[in-house]
Length: 604
Image (cartoon, rainbow, N blue to C red; front, side, top):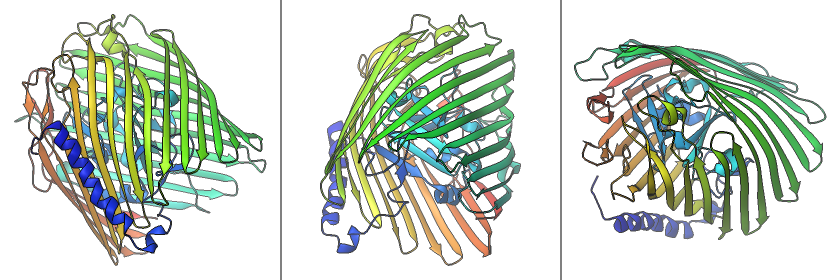
């Protein structure tokens, strides 16, 4: 993508939004009709309470069940690549290690939730995105901007929450999917969900296996297999009290450069919610997440097991259109490994509160959180947001928020790599945005700047703190549903800079574009996606440059009988040879070339 001066890029994004705003002003009266759930979805991650996208005062992207089924991705990260503010790098395809960047912040600076339960590795810091089977989920919410005052450490760049099916339809709703394709890939999944009286349920299982492809040039194929299972049951009593349990587990084997590993990813939780009074609801959640890996490499075998146990208590108080949320959280990280870490556990106690105030046309959101961690001490984070509804279709917003990110066990203690003197990362973010919401389409534009102190950096060397970093950027997103068409577009500009050297922070692309187009034609559906990104640098000195790329993916669906359908997806149709990262010895980690997958589905 063409390089432009920073001010020119920011101006381009602002000017790109202007024609759409002008067009909206002259739209006919039909534009005043309520926007569809797809175009203005209800979001719960941004504010711990349900708000439509235009009410959330946040930069949000929602991928609903229809989007997940249309794309039918092999990896969940395939859906995130190129979404507004989101970048993905990976050490090859099919289960290989992946990192998800939100607004220029890395995987360890963002939070992944599965039905409200955090999943991450205390040793590496990030989540094992590549081990999550997308067929286990029916919705994803991407919230961009700091959420440290709601979710604690790591929520510096944003939060991604994945949701499992909840069973909202009366009676059992079975579904089955069987398919396969390139690289001797095989996929099968089955599930049933529904509701009987006050009890909802969802049970599912899936298996994925592939011979894979080389991840180094002239290398051998690197296979991957994953077996996942989901159980979710909830019951609502006549009094309004709710109780529920959730368990999601994925286990399998992944071959990588220099060895293989057996992995387990698991979240489990139990919750109870009680209407204490008419205007007071209280919810207690007890949960545990596990990230386990048994590695068998050329340098020997190793074990890295992480367990995070959490108790979270939330209280929601309502006063007319206003809401106050207050709660407390206790969590404990435990590490068991063949590596001798100086510390193997640490606990964190936190209290938090949030006010959601509606003085239409002005809305206010303010939150505050205090964390006390036995390893890195006390931290206070907060945020404040204000929105102004210009009319029934346009909303201005402004946000300020702080966040922090504690060093991981690897960053602190890993032999030859860790640095026990590391300080926690802290950040301040300012954002302004505007959203236009109409019956058949929407657009959203945002400008932001994040200043980070003590950013932790290092690639194959001793970890250290970068005194000052600055990430500023612009995002423009839009969507349209009309006459069988579903269109989505996202433009992202990011300027992640090490203020000490003036270099771009490593592993980050600065420009990306994503276009999605789908068309329903009777029993058929046709669609495609184009994702393009410019270059990035593998090293902090900006000497090791990785070229940009453009990917074209195509898809088709056929509803050939009631409840029966077939789907064909063609990935990387132009057979682009692209890389997003390199190994420590400088070898390219190559991604899969052209690939095709065919599947048959039964069910809703």
